Length: 429
Ligand SMILES: [Zn+2]
Image 1 (cartoon, rainbow, N blue to C red):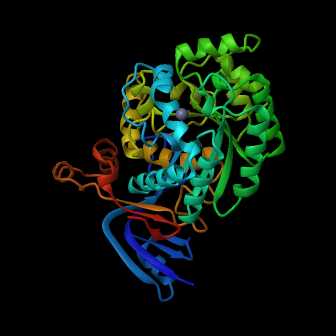
Image 2: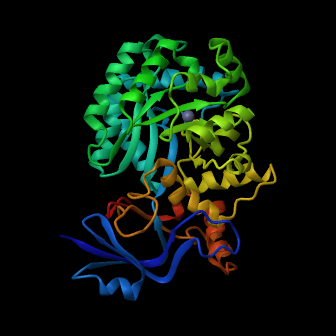
């Protein structure tokens, strides 16, 4: 039994914060501590009280830095680590020119394994301890993704994409093959350590009706698995989806028809939604995922968070590497803040930091394991330094409150502001 006490300023959100002045939504201790035993949190709060619960614990002193739950990224693409920062006109152009050729390389297990190392380093360097990723169509890529995450003891969600049309030959499976390979991967990885499987039809444009049928069967037969896909990202994409599925009521209606939508469904982008589609999400519990850096980079449009919230829909927030431009959830908040500003919607720093921790955990239904510093949670933590660069230090001199510090972190911060990342109590940097 190994016990460690981490000292620092401790911050964890208990519920969604309404914004400025709502100081009861979180627990914050200036002189705080987190007690960790065998990778799980035993207690977090005032240092004195936490110390009383400790035995002969090793002490790690992070004062005066901020200790928070590790960040959670609810949508990104593992095989796009070398696509990030590729010039392209829009979504479909960018997919065909850069992404599909790059994903072909993941048929090779050795390449996949090497990329997995870089991918996971990228996550933890930026304070992310859980992510939901698409792998390539090749089982090899999913094997590499899960093997590396499992080795690092991380809570990770992912799946091989199912795609059987309208892409290069080497990126296509068939309805049967995609069903069989997904099922094999579910059997091997879903519930192994902290791994979860996501059934992953890439999007309606690259799946035949027969393949969406197979995806629907997988969803029905594996109710504890997640389901992830893309919807309503780009106007040309929407037009194409309607062309391919003329009998569907709308784009989301395609997934609805094949039984893909439930509370474990994650829908990337959701920018150009119809009223009916919003209603379907509210009804099924499928969660939209906001990917601000990607939406800006590909010129896709502005995610309307407030309208979804008004219908009782909680959104996830994510990087969408490689359409997204940064692994950093801090930079994701920075760009997300601006996307909402353009629509006269405000994102308070409390709301923001709750979103990338407890909020995303809640969207995944994994709050018991991740997203807070509550007793019983995994000791997945990030240590943040709001004075990480000379410019941040200069700005920090004028910071007078926790809210101001958090805002400085999300606007000026990136991996340099991440002093340390812990996965199940183990330092990653
Ligand atoms: Zn995506």
